[in-house]
Length: 209
Image (tube, rainbow, N blue to C red; front, side, top):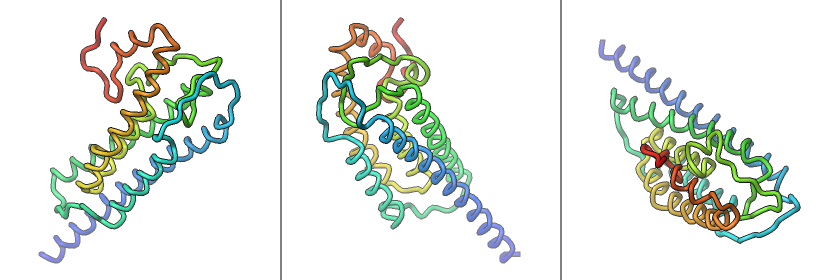
């Protein structure tokens, strides 16, 4: 009887881990593909009106991704917890964050379109996007990555990965987002009003009318 229970438990753990790994892989590859498409289409886009160099760009984001991958891959900071309703719930929340993050990231890129740039750029024909996922958060591309890193750290039960996202990636994204917002506020008179209504990385529970 004990052998059968152990076998069933091992099978359950294997299935849960497999599902978690598939979700992480599919969501990550989808976003990386979307990033590659943006680079191919818009990296050399003409018509730049103003450009500000930022230390936070795709290259530095990929460096963080490599750090995050190493923490997860080599189980540095991984919690050795047993499968229980709590851990399954935590992994389910992490998986949901990954899926929602990937969807928001891709939708955000599609809606942003030719306004995308690796650096902080204002184009001659720049438009202010406030619809679709931009009604949810002001920076859906950055927000979704924050959500996805948090989700992956929950799926793998890795507290160092979670802290790296909160203490390194989130501040870096905040720095980059504020750089962009200074440029957008100078370009669009109604940007301050948009800031008041919509959260930077997380939806506002109570919006100002």
